[in-house]
Image (cartoon, rainbow, N blue to C red; front, side, top):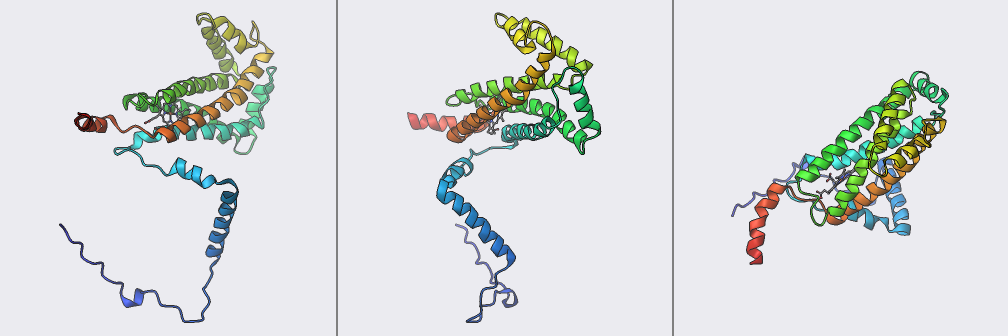
Length: 267
Ligand code: HEM
């Protein structure tokens, strides 16, 4: 057995000096700020008992071998949050008006509003980032076998999240209402219409009628900024609840290492 050598004491010049009896503790502004923060959190916790839930959610053991690929789910979640925040700012200026107002409002955001082009750019590029991340995250869970028992329900929720993310991209594409958005959406709606059984109903629903008209844009806008984000937020909540409840899967190479031991133990 290896013995650890004792830690040498600090030189006397660096050792903390004992307080003179009767001297008051020196309270710095940082101590006051810390105390105020702690009191505020305590005040909330005493009334809600939230700290138990927060500890349950955040302080948990993760399997050996957890690596950077496990961050893809959280990265997708942050992409979603960024889309939600930038989307709220864009909605403050956007007008779903098919007779030129929509195009004009987007032009105004891009050229006249302070940081408008930046926020619009974040939303536009962020949408691509989210789609790429959601696919990478799905690939990670697939190749690590995380869809198997007992996580099947989380995989199913994931599939719905994937579809909803694609619907966000599809409905957002029309909103600038320029030539490209208009014609690309007509093609997309027609492709939906070719689906078996539900296809024609789906394309009628998306167009808000048999023809592409003025209400189509409002329909896309409400799906894009109310219906799907609400569903996404709720399902991400359920997805994360299940991750916290079931824990994450160990990488398959470590599971393979463990398997023979398990069989031995079972015999
Ligand atoms: C908006 C989209 C999504 C978000 C925000 C999201 C978020 C997350 C997060 C934060 C985790 C835990 C950390 C991790 O393993 O990366 C996770 C785990 C998981 N996700 Fe997703 N996810 C999304 C979409 C999907 C999709 C499309 C699938 C598959 C079809 C999926 C299947 C799973 C599974 C099976 C787990 C458990 C992983 C394990 O136990 O190791 N998720 N998700």
